[in-house]
Image 1 (cartoon, rainbow, N blue to C red):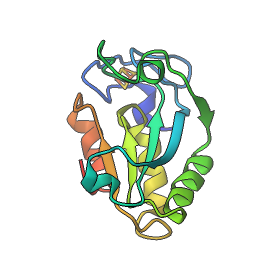
Image 2 (tube, protein in one colour):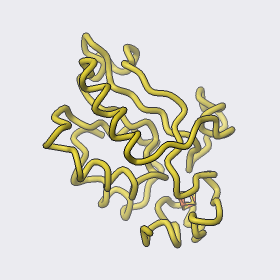
Image 3 (cartoon, rainbow, N blue to C red):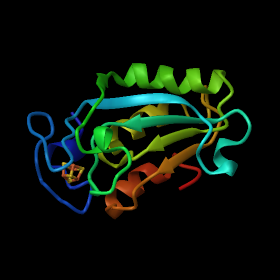
Length: 153
Ligand code: SF4
């Protein structure tokens, strides 16, 4: 069990819930949930480059901005639960397909899980940069955990 998920204060909402058996404001549990992944051509040109950005859209959101263009994913929580192993495979697949980077779209709620995954492959099998595509609605605790494996914010 990850201690950060047992009393979740990963973002400024500071729900304090145990995500192993409850959900906070964001709607995320202890399991990673994603809506979509692809070689995304429509990020900023420097991120998409010529081949595309290896973008992974995480379900749920700790900010839930009412103007969000991805409402179905961020507010409605659309997506499927996947294992850490599967997410690792997706990152490596995107790299294999020519992605210039791995682009984590709103990773905040999944900080501890992503830290574990990136610690095991970044700089080893995963050699492309990691982009932290945050809403900026963050607590320093989550940024500190993710910081050692992120190249671009
Ligand atoms: S990440 Fe989710 S559960 Fe944790 S404090 Fe933020 S809104 Fe609450």
